Amino acid sequence: MLVVGIVGSPRKNGLTNKLVTEALAGAQSIGAKVRTIYLIDYDIRPWTLENPKAPEELNEIMREADGYIIGAPVYYLDINGLTKDFLDTVDLGDSNGKPGFGITIAGGTGKGLVLAIKSIYYFFFCKSIRALEPLPVSRFNFNKALKRANELGRKLAEEARKRRPFKSLEERIRYFSNIKYMNMDMVDEILLLAEQLLESSPKQEYKEEAITYYKRAKELISRGERDKAITYAVKAYELLYY
Image: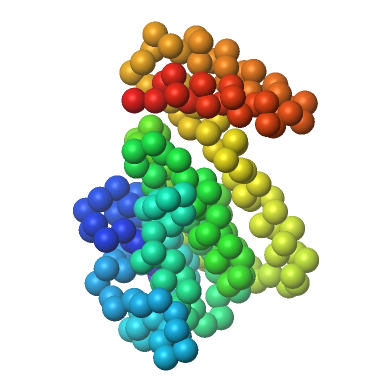
């Protein structure tokens, strides 16, 4: 059983690598063979008619894998170009039912951690990969995310023991429609970041005020007033951002 971890960041020793490494450690802890792939080591180019596939060495590794972990940094609310070019050109062969999960890491403001994960999960959908819960990460929840990466790595290895192919498009759409975070938009994302900051921000003198704004935003959303909720969601986030 082989689990392959993709590090989409051009920085081999960055946060993306730490998260993917921890996920692979989880898979390895229950007996999986693991392999780390650094995309920066390969000549991955944008898709063209003359260059429709990733390097064959990389394709062969991916076709042999029983499970996939894909980690990417966030650039401008989406995954970075290197990872996107990989997704556009990699040849997985028959991947129907193989398990996978995606990790995105948004430094700085944290914005894009959820919006970017959707790019990886749309790829999983198109390749019929049976995706686990995503792991959207910011610097505000990084330590907690490392633990979760290990847990999801173990879960992925367990799923890889018994491949479960999708039997129809209907089943696949229903499955992906129920994956956590997939229905989130910018408003939901900024509230998620506010939640993370409520736990980790050093600006504790503003915590009670931020909680009030956060609760108000959630209340307005529950009433279908998402446009009004934006004001309070942003206030909660900006009070605690550091």
